[in-house]
Length: 130
Image (cartoon, rainbow, N blue to C red; front, side):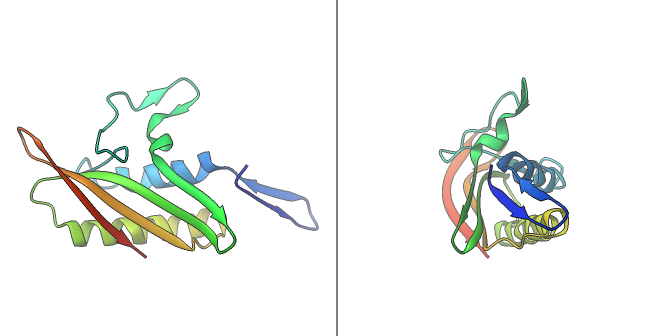
């Protein structure tokens, strides 16, 4: 369990899986321009497994003293504006988590681990953070 809040009506709990699904939905809005990868830049071949989504395992979600911290590793298609897309993705993730869970994230970071062209992937390590 990631977050638990006791109210007069009952308890509310949010797991990492819920936050991970929100992040995956936000990335999927970019229609394949952005793909979630691991920290080494490898995109999972199969995105579904029994009982969950393997891409959620590649998202670092921590709830510390200052609040919710999210780190997403992504690979982008060649010709995509890294600054524009990462800032849009950070804003999308921030707003969706705030809307769905009523928890404002402390920080959202998108790390571009590579750029894909038709023939090869060029490794990068570019971190954009809010």
